[in-house]
Length: 158
Image 1 (cartoon, rainbow, N blue to C red):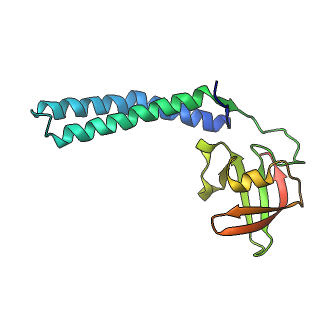
Image 2 (cartoon, one colour):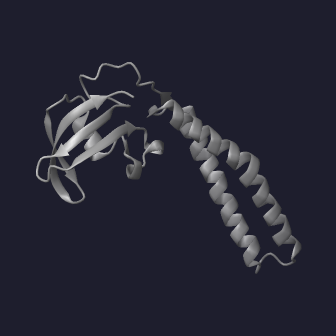
Image 3 (cartoon, rainbow, N blue to C red):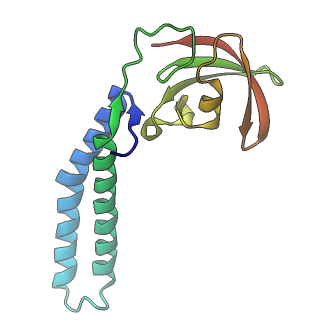
């Protein structure tokens, strides 16, 4: 079996819900769109038909991807862990050494990440740099804007 994919319980449930929606809502809807487009006659030059078939292909591809990710999921419950080192599921407060700007991130699985609300992928450069580190340790991270240094101020498992 291929590599396991770490995720939180919430991330797993979100993928399950997406799969349910794709199979019970999106797939039947696109089948109806294809039937309607086919009823318009010659499908060789029917733009609606070809667009619907493209959407169907996209939906079927996404279903396969989500099924694969759920099959390889490793659901990790971070609660109750000791906050002595950064691990999956940790919420970490960092301070940029140069600008003194504080940021708070929670390390989650790739499918759950949303940097706009402070959820970063465990495979992101910042997460990889701070994994296993403790409070008051400083790390250097190569980010798209160059190299930055962060000091870990707080580690907690909410």
